[in-house]
Image (tube, rainbow, N blue to C red; front, top):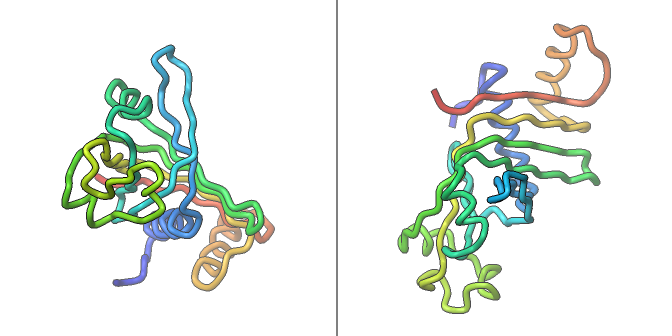
Length: 167
């Protein structure tokens, strides 16, 4: 894999890295009453600009996503001062092959029959944009953070970035 070279590419890579590291996120959907509904979810797959979660096909979140595909995925690790927020488009899919590929035993308490459970579905979130905050950047991201801060006339160690995904 080639190293990201543009600020947007670096921000996309950083947002994905934070999500991959944190793994437990809050998935926010639109409730039937028009409000927001948030719940903790475990990321079971992260491929390019797609985040995967397991769900029950008849769960409230599945119904909410069926009515409104716009979601927010928010993650934080306060101990490391890392935070990321992703706006995306969600869909609920039942794909036995993909479910088997992403299966983790962590899901067995909810789906005792495993990856082939009739109630099991996947939530696919296609990331549209992301914003992150990291107070302890390292490596190439540290250099990028320093250059960005110099360009924007800011000081400090915190790294902040925004990225667009897709076209």
